[in-house]
Image 1 (cartoon, rainbow, N blue to C red):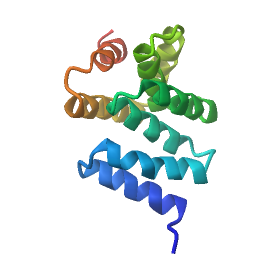
Image 2: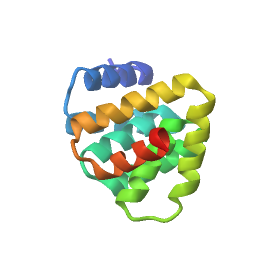
Image 3: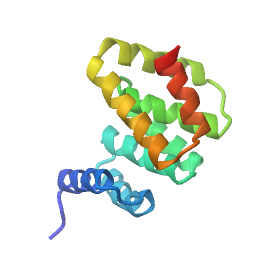
Image 4: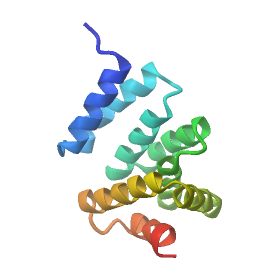
Length: 140
């Protein structure tokens, strides 16, 4: 029996939290995205996983879809900024400013993004782009 999209997504999140390697989770989130094309959270997760495995072009595509589907998702914006920095694309500032506004307005979003930044730096130490974004969002 095929899992529901929601169950597959939740399982992927739990496996990530348990420390499973991003490489093994990318196919899970790709399947969720394929089966539920308008699921911005799945696209956000897929972008993050691509960033963790140094695939910024794929991360940019996934993060762009996530932001297009939900412009109020601070983490999707952060992922897009990271992918843009890694791909040396222009236009980062406007996305940083929107992310700043979102995390300033909603404390829960701020906490979530902060936790994700710390998680990213733990999983991928010395991640220069993420270190820059952390300064922009939380130390500016």
